[in-house]
Image (tube, rainbow, N blue to C red):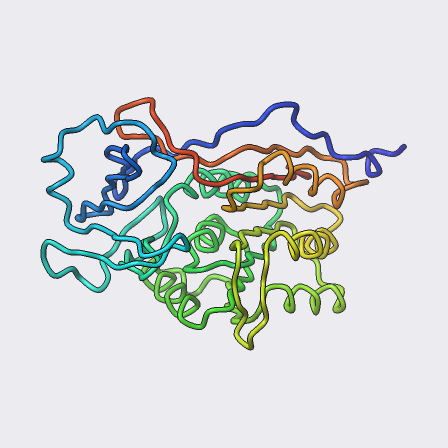
Amino acid sequence: MTASARPPAVAPAPIVMRTTAWKDYALIDSGDGRKLERYGRYRVVRPEPQCLWRPRLDAAAWAGADAVFDPTDEDEAGRWRFSRPPAETWPLAWGDVRFHGRFTAFRHLAFFPEQAANWSWLDQRVRNSKEPLKILNLFGYTGVASLVCAAAGAAVTHVDASKKAIGWARENAALSKLEDRPIRWICEDARRYVQREVKRGSRYDGVILDPPKYGRGPTGEVWRLFEDLPELLGLCAELLSEKASFLILNAYAERISGLSLAGLMAGHAAGRGGAIDWGELALMEEGGERGVGLSFFARWSGQP
């Protein structure tokens, strides 16, 4: 068996990619099914069922929050309560990237802070590459991962089915002063785009795949994670160049695990060699050792 025909080596144990506080974000406290967080100048309380423990801070610390999200169902819908009228947007930063915070109708604030652990890995991967990387970011949302890669020197194709999300991503690129970087903004269903790219014979050195549990494309296409992920991951593997650097898969579904994602990825990366790490992304409380696991991932690494 040649080096290029080796199966990928799957890590024997999971790793936890921990996101700790930075200047514009912190998990201040957690407990009783909620998180107390800082997003720039705003203190925010959001529901988090996994926080089964008691908060460390007293009730007064939580009562001083600027915004509280009250859920109306289990699919992240609900409404915000504010102690004072909030700004429509406000600037935040991570490394060289600037982006807007926003109070969305689905409890998040237009980015996912636990992904900072992935951003750090991507930043180093791109900067340490011997050649510029061509990267595909699927379900790219407001573009922070795309901008991290672009700021590090990669050419990025950013795909999302939401015209609004693409607009926000472009605004973030302008805020970061990265409009002149080689970023293609594609508003399209991710699966359809990848299918066409495979037919065209396109190749990428890295693929970021961060699908939702359920979603709809711009012309009504339906996405269901468990039914549709195996095919999409296989197509993404076909898009990897001969000297590809990575394929990252992230999933927030409760009924999935990092190990199952690694198994799926190993099947599609057969013959490529390299290694597959797997585990979960976690937010760590500011100044403490307690953390909240929020999503699972598998990551194939090929050429350094």
